[in-house]
Image (cartoon, rainbow, N blue to C red):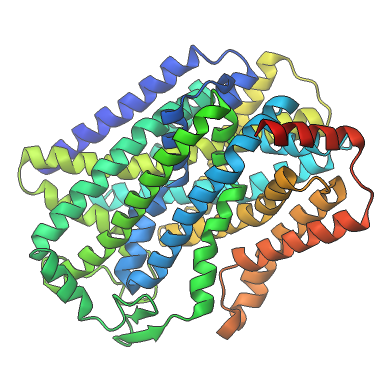
Length: 517
């Protein structure tokens, strides 16, 4: 092992040890299933804000977004980032406080559980559908995190990609199964700090190495369409490709996904006081604005470094349109940093720990949500198997491990794109849960039939659009979230109006929560 590799390993080892320690300490506060899934509703405003955003900003923040910007320029990554920034703020503004109050009043500890009690669904259909879709989309989402870890260690030490991925998964599962939701939230708070430091340091290093800010702009600007918000850079043709209004709208619509993300919505439900969510919203919005802005610009800086000859090209010559290789940008930069001495190797290790942080902070939250969907929503409530407190905890942890195994299988191919996997899962959650979440909180006429029809139509449309409509190309080549979200909204409204109005008890609770919020 070289001196640089030793320094990197020390930093990463200390970081991972700290995460496992937090999981062990949190286990002392996890006494029952409600603590395991929701942490006893005792998160403070800072931890609520930063754990929500860290669990949101998965490996696509440090790998996916910079890699996309490196490959095609600022348009695709920039419009996506703009949508995420807007969606973050609006989700905190309109969803957080009302969902917190509603779930406390209904004593709901999961998102499917909320829908069941919100619509007084004794048949458990809404609960079962919600739990199934959580499993369908969380498995690939978790896979994206494992893929990022595999790429990190494979690129860094030349070890087998699959082995690196498995080891990373074992560590994530280790602290999550131990401490549950509290462990996930506390580690996410720490990981948000590590992610921020990593982005800032690598960006500064890249600008200096590229010859300064002016050189970055000049070098990147030499590529046709690279710095144009209405065009992208075509690597194969070395020319600008148009980036039309429909592309802008659909990528901006990434922000719609926030209204349906279970791992983010759970943070709203777990906060200590609804009144503290205003402060949490401000903290979260500022952090997302800064971190995504840096991530996009990091891709520009990386491409400028390639143009100036100080960084090897990360465009795959065999597949110049794929972002898979470009997503290793921050890993390559960290390797360069580590070559400047032992101290810089330790710093590089911190940067690489930031990649682990971005991955782990999302994967742990997804694993918690997925295990709750099976243990609480499917096994106990839908199937009707009554479990003791001990058996319920064992089932939750076993499910968590099973989801991790399926995630590993999906991410087994080292050429899988982190951004591509995340975008599909994001669309799925946004379309299945987003429309019904908004309408359940703000439209009292929404009923059980509308909720069921909306979730099913939203989920199906994601698959239909991605695999049947989008391949037609042209104006149909749009990100599947926007059309699926729109279809689900329309279906919920139409079906709710055509079927029986909600019972008086449901309306009364809606009015009570509206006054509280």
